[in-house]
Length: 363
Ligand SMILES: NC(=O)c1ccc[n+]([C@@H]2O[C@H](COP(=O)([O-])OP(=O)(O)OC[C@H]3O[C@@H](n4cnc5c(N)ncnc54)[C@H](O)[C@@H]3O)[C@@H](O)[C@H]2O)c1
Image (spheres, helix red, strand yellow):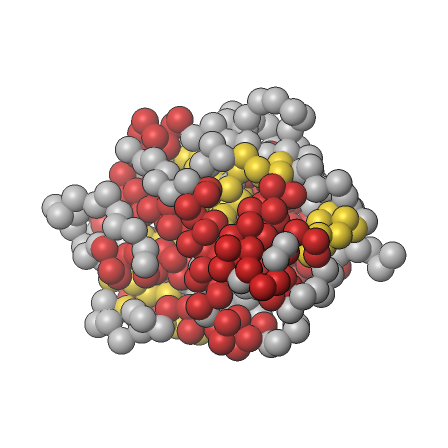
C-alpha cells in the first residue's frame, strides 16, 4: 500500500495530469494521489511494454480517476486531453527508461523522452493561454528526471542541485535533453516548471527487466543471477513510495524554477542488492537456499557509470520530505510482494520474456 503523503487536509483539490501513470513510479504516484490526497488524476499513458492498466486497477473505478490512452508525442491528442480535463498541474513521468534498451535502440528514447517532453511542454503552454491569470499562477509542471543525468562519481562526493550535467548513456542523454527543455520553458516562457532528479527506485509493480524483480524471478526459476562486471557499481536505493511522496510534495509545495533531488542515503553495490534479495529468499524458500550460489559475474554494461549518490538536503529543507523506508525493510517487503504477485509478473512479462540479457552491443 502506498504510504500517505504529508498532505495537509487544507490542500485544495487539483486536477493532475500524470503521464506514464501505468508504469512503475507513475502507478505508485497515481495510487498515492487517489488514496491519500483530495486530487483528481488524469492518467495519460501510451501503454508501451512497460505500462499496464493492471498497475492501477485498484483505483480505476474511483470517480476522481480517468485514463487516456495516448502518446506524449501526439500534439493533437495532448491538446484534446488538456481541453477535456483542464488540468491544474502536470506530473510528467512518461519515458523510455531502461538503460540496456537504450544501448540496443536509442531512437525510441530520443523520440519519447526528448520530443515527447517538448510536445507536452508546448501543449501545457497552449493550455495556459486559455486559463485565468490566477489559474496560470497556480499551475505546476513537475518534470520527473533521474540522477543519471549527472554522470558518474568516484568513491566519494554526492550529486547536488548545481552539479553539471554529464550524461553518458543514450537513456541519460535523452533525460538530460528533456530536463534542459523543461528548464528552458520556465526561463524563456515563464512556464511554472519544477524539475526533480531521483536516485534508483525499487518496490512493487516494477517491470521485470529491472534489477530487483529480475533477480527475484530468475532466482525462482533457478536461473543464474547475472551481476554486471565485478558488481561493485554503487547506486542509492529509494523505495518508490518515498519517491511518490516527494513528487506529491513538489507538486503541492515546490517553487517554480526549482530543482529537488530525492535520494535515500542508502548506497548499495549491485552485489549488495542481489545478495540482500538472496538472503530474503533463503528465509522464505529455505529448500532452495543458498540462492547466492546462482550469482554469476557477466560482462559489464558498456559505459556503466561507477557510482551515483544524492544530496537530498534541499528537498528535506524546502519540501519537508524525508524517506521513510530503510533499504533492509523495503527490500524484504518488495521481495515478498513479487512472491505474492507471480501471476502479475507472468502477465506483465511472460513466463520467461524480460529475463534475458539486453544492451551488450551484440558481443
Ligand atoms: N525507475 C527509476 O529508478 C527512476 C529513477 C529516477 C527517475 N526515473 C524517471 O521516472 C519516470 C518513470 O520511470 P519508471 O521507472 O516508472 O518507468 P517505466 O518504464 O516503468 O514506465 C514508463 C511509463 O511511460 C509510458 N510511456 C512510455 N512512452 C510513452 C509515450 N511516448 N507516451 C505516453 N506514455 C509513454 C509507459 O507505457 C509506462 O507506463 C521516468 O521519467 C524515469 O526517467 C526513474
